[in-house]
Figure (tube, rainbow, N blue to C red):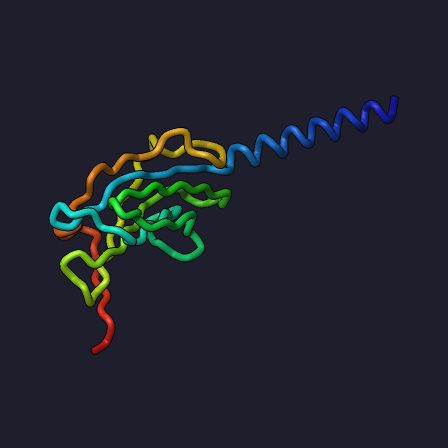
Length: 142
């Protein structure tokens, strides 16, 4: 009797822990195409962060665009923080010497519980020649 009661408690404890872990992990992702003056941009860096601060601790995934400018980036986080994912894009469109960087928020509807997103946020074709509201520019010292 004692052994069966102990086994029942262990089973309940494991179920509770598993459900807490399942709820605390959130995932998201994005897909799109990067172009500069209508020409696909290859090797542009695309990063997915847990929030817009883009701190290294919040980095979930990194990829680069392929030869046709397309990318897919997916990630998840188990941290107990506000999950407001952002895609950060770094490129050199109209700025060969300097790196241009901007972020775009992933809508809440594309954030799901678990480690794999069920649907990706489609950015569509993003024209990089324009200046984005969140854009920064970093140039090496001459």
